[in-house]
Amino acid sequence: MRNLKYVFLLASLICLSCKKEKETHKKPKLVVGVVIDQMRYDYLTRYYDRYGNDGFKRLLKDGFSLENAHYNYIPTYTAVGHASIYTGTTPDMHGIIGNWWYDKYVKKSIYCVTDSTYTTIGSESKYGKRSPYRLYTTTITDQLRLAQNMKGKTIGVAIKDRSSILPAGHTATAAYWFDNTRESKVITSSFYMDELPNWVKEFNNSKPADAYTSKPWETLYDINTYTSSLPDNNPFEETFKGEKTPTFPHDLPRLKEQNWGNGIIKETPFGNSITLDLVKAAILGEDLGKTGYTDFLAISFSSTDYVGHRYGPDAIETEDTYLRLDKDLADLFTFLDNEVGNGNYTLFLTADHAAAQVPAYLESIRIPAQYFDSKGFKQFMKDVCTKHFKSGNLIENISNHQIFLNKKELERLQLSSNQVSQVLADEAINFNGIYKAVTARTMQTINFNRGILRTLQNGYNQKFSGDVLLIPNPASITGHRNGGTTHGSGYSYDTHIPMIFYGNGIKKGSSSKRYEIIDIAPTLSNLLQIEFPNGSTGAIIHEVLSE
Image (cartoon, rainbow, N blue to C red):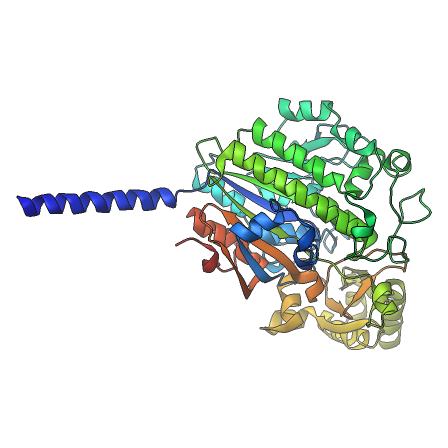
């Protein structure tokens, strides 16, 4: 009898232990994806001493930071980044090959989320005619909904339409973005609903942008303390219309009349703040984290990209934007703690791409850099076609560093696409600014397992991409010397981004091992114990997950 008591006691302890183990690893009530548009990894370290304890530092201290995370494809653009994060695969699979790209079937440039079969909900503008139908694979947000028999909610929130629509996926409850008008109202598409919810109507009726654009953009701290940046007045930045110099303070009440009205907010750090306001309203309005299922909130902070394009990585404006974003993130985390409960949500933070330093600045300190002459290149390639094939009409389009051949002209001249493509690739390499050039045939027949050509191959989509693919020189951008920067390459300054996991099911720590952006979706799928997105090619990052 005594032994039997011990057996029962042991069994009870085991059951209690199992119960505690199960409770420790219970699924989160809410998953939050935070994508910061154009955030380079070094913004975490460059401004680290200036961040508070409750924003970026909270994630670094209590979450798991992957310090060597990269994009593994070309081109590194916004739509492609958001699609790749949430599908766990690259453009060769998911089909989003740019923000805009030349459609060789309809013979025109198309936008990644335009869909004329739907209408704008929330304004009279055309900017709600959108859907994710060009995204060919499922997202982790789709898989979470499928795993719960279409229960639970998925909400996308961003200033940019593509940054809200693509993460939220095909089965989203809703995706919201700001229309590109002077009013800058929150809108959506009839793909999701027929009418805005009352909480969104109330948000719009409060005219939240007015509060942010009615005062100048001044530095958060004494401007003399911004020692991680170049001097305020330097030749490597762009100005707003109506400004003589790119310097503080930026008089938003005056400038907005010449710069899209309230739409100017997206070009300031306050665009991130109004995004946070909408996020809070969504959490409350949709009871996220309280539905009885696991909900998913996909957030993208877009203003960092607009500021980065105008001013570049070394500007006081960029530094100030990240210091303000750090405060917004701290506010977001506190709000999640209070409304959902610390320990009840899992969060990841990353970026959709990084950014090049301004080539003119690099040139000024004798680092090789360049502005690619796209107009000159088009003429050069036309001359090549005339020289080799006696035709100036063989090229139908050059865009996104891809050449599309005119198939009708090939037919007329009885030329093969492969023959012409190889000649163009061989000649393109002779143009100043082109570093590598390969044909579509090469992408289809050779498997590159490392280096930048592997990155190019991951971004090549046989159905949609061009006949010749080009890689410009390192540290070069397309455009004129009018200040600011851009992104899109496969070089590390465009691919190296932060990747931090935090919250329910996540360990504390960091790693310098190389990981890729497509690893986020399978890692979260494993945490949630759901099926991976159907095109996923990423790997589970085991070292971030609690045992």
